[in-house]
Length: 321
Image 1 (cartoon, rainbow, N blue to C red):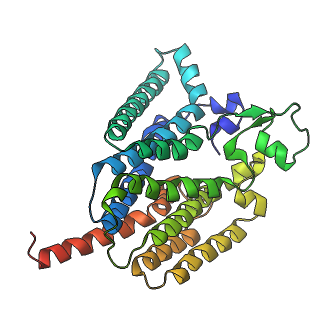
Image 2: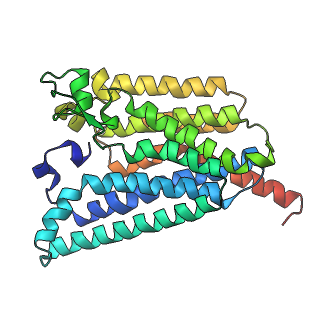
Image 3: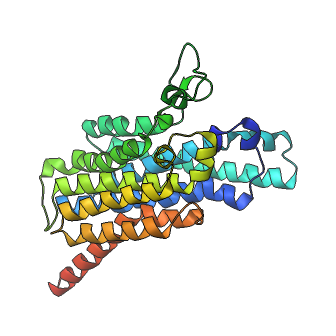
């Protein structure tokens, strides 16, 4: 669970500098690489070309949304370090935050540059999918009275009666799946769609949208499995908490991945990606190291690499090299 879901005191507890660096820099960059791979994959498999604009838009949007969320999560630590900047630990913390701000500003500048070279509809679609992610942990409005009992409304509102998107009971994974799955495809299509599809077997737009949405949603649930003990203790309404079981959650995720495999059984790449994801569902749990959960996010990246290798071999055989 993110520190923003906890008290200010616990959020300001000292973190190892290495862990803070990973939270503010490593994690956003690692997940952004997944969006880079997926957007390039969709561009090539559906439109027959790799265009820098949608790839840069999707990659930098990931850095901004994830990076800002994590930056906000650790804002209390920054405020605490700023009170005594000369202390060795605090100085190291402030340097990490400075690098994080540099990453965010750079990503924002590159995003604006890519959008400036893209059609107007790309601006609208990017805003449509990025805005909910930017407001992910922001109180949008407050109830007149914060519910005292731990009802669904109370969990959604948090302890202070504020409505926050990420606290909608059981909806976090679905929202992430739609943003990352449908959003990536729509942004790529908005830039390259004017040229028409240049489908390469065995791919179709529907396959990419459904597979990506399910894959990204399931990864979001895997992250909730990782945080299950903390989320359960604090009453955060993630899917594992609502099911009251990591095992039940794993069974559900397996069913979703197997459903994708059966629906697209003739596409060996989707079958490979789903099998990869299922293997990690059962290999990882709440006791696994945090870094291993990134492998779950990169199941589509692995498939994209296999696809790229196949296309490279075909190009070589045709004498294109």
